Length: 436
Image 1 (cartoon, one colour):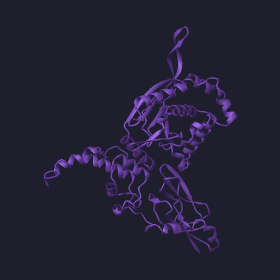
Image 2 (cartoon, one colour):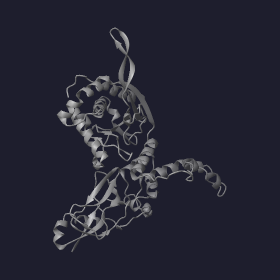
Image 3 (cartoon, rainbow, N blue to C red):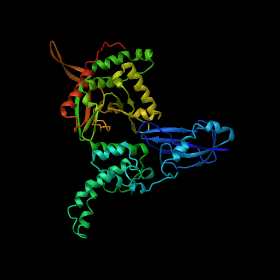
Image 4 (tube, rainbow, N blue to C red):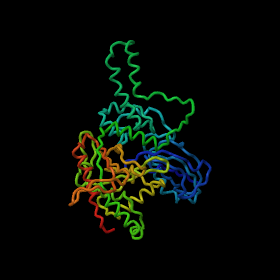
């Protein structure tokens, strides 16, 4: 008999840990080669972890909802003697894990790691970014109690620390007296938390699921990080709508894809980014990181009601057929929870279509660490004034609102407004005779 460690796999660049969602097997269960043993989650992507060998589960080292570092043993599988050779590809991971600092294969929700030196304690890129933006020193960072795996500091810990530090000045003015300032200082944290919600009466309490918690944390962090400004324009997209109505059946026959408005919007945004490259950047302290790649994220609604943002990599290098295929593929796999971790990473700009829900406009929240996000509203027939050689006339046109929320630390009104107007211009100037 041989024992093989089932290792927490690495799911993508910069991903250092994953959450165990569900165990499909329990100790004593038989498992076949490549049969899923458990489901894990990283950020917003859920994945299956298959067995590297055929055998029997003899021990499970972590519980559901535990956060586990990559390359860590999470279960032990016992194989027959003849299966030892098949298990060999997976076994090198076990010695590697054993050479790391002492590891106990069980939940470690203690704060012992808080006293570790900065050279020993792991901080995720997001935590370090928040620390840099909030001018949190290394000493302060090392002192923050972590609630993550092995005492690691999480985004939630950082936001709590920042909120607590902001409320500190209220208690700071009177440090000399010992007993007297204690009572006036106590009310200071009160404005931070909302009033307690009564749970009596005709109410239902619903616990946020994992994805909703992640979205909530990300939205709060974004509003806390960036001073948001939103600009609006109205665009006449009559030519675009008429063209799509004329070619959609032929397009489906030729390419086997349904053409929606989304790839047309993405095409216009990609062209405008090339005209205004400073909209395609992020901020690192006082440095502006200008992105040469145009990777456009598109917010997609899931059946659960949550949102996910798959990324169209190199959007400016794709023609309309390529954009249509990519958009349809990402949207389909997003709804089926089949996206890969790298497919929701690396975005430089985000598009969200609030018109899908019948809304005419919206003020979206920036998808950090980007500096801008565009919302497109519903396309509606409206009377509009047209200038002709015979004078102004009123005609029924297909109109829509575009809105752009941008980070006012680096994008001012001129850049944000000019970029938004350029996108609208590209949509309004769409060639009604364009070949498919």
